[in-house]
Length: 280
Ligand SMILES: C[S@@+](CC[C@H](N)C(=O)[O-])C[C@H]1O[C@@H](n2cnc3c(N)ncnc32)[C@H](O)[C@@H]1O
Image 1 (cartoon, rainbow, N blue to C red):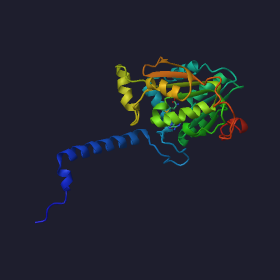
Image 2 (tube, protein in one colour; image 1 turned 120 degrees about the vertical axis):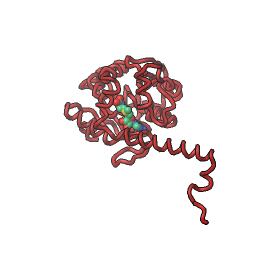
Image 3 (tube, protein in one colour; image 1 turned 45 degrees about the vertical axis):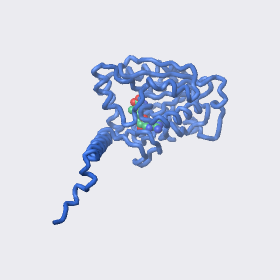
Image 4 (cartoon, protein in one colour; image 1 turned 135 degrees about the horizontal axis):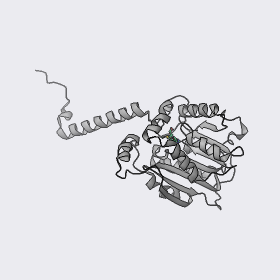
């Protein structure tokens, strides 16, 4: 009599079956995450910038989702980020991982007509939504499709770099690469402000929100960032809580005597300022 070929002999091993089952569950969870949240590593959508960061491709639903997850506190959350960055009229500001441009919009209001505001995101859909919103509001913000690890700007371009809810989209090595790029494009004395998720403290909301927002690679939270920021060459590092329970911040500065930033190089083209807003 022919022996059944299935399951193969190796799969009859109980230990192997446990491993196979765990692998299958992991695969199912990743597939649910991908379908629900559209996160993925590669530039699978045309027009995206190439990155190993996790992109968002549900740009049209992003703002309502954030409103829901923050229980309507999203506008206050962005105002607080702009406050923490202390953006002054006339300053040049870059938001990395700008998504639909909500924080960049607030930065633009503070930098005023003499200031310059850019936003980059590797997701072409996010940038499309950000540009459409800025165009409707007649704001001259320069939104570009790009990744934090390859910023298309000359060294020493910006007074301030903002990162809101973005760092947890990067693996640890990408955080290091990205922060080195951020330091490069900041002027000596330039400021970095990061707002991101904290470890759940026990509150019901943070416990519910965390597994939804967390991604496969998010081993670390905003509380783990200060040493990474310091290793990237920043000084005056401060961290703390925000008024939104599950978010914290890290702020830092490029040392004033830093010779590795602030000198123009041929790496990037100058920001919007050479081109009409939103056309880059
Ligand atoms: C949760 S959203 C945050 C959007 C916006 N900053 C906000 O506060 O609502 C994270 C963004 O990071 C972007 N992202 C992923 N990898 C990135 C990378 N390597 N460089 C810059 N942004 C990245 C995603 O596409 C996504 O739009």
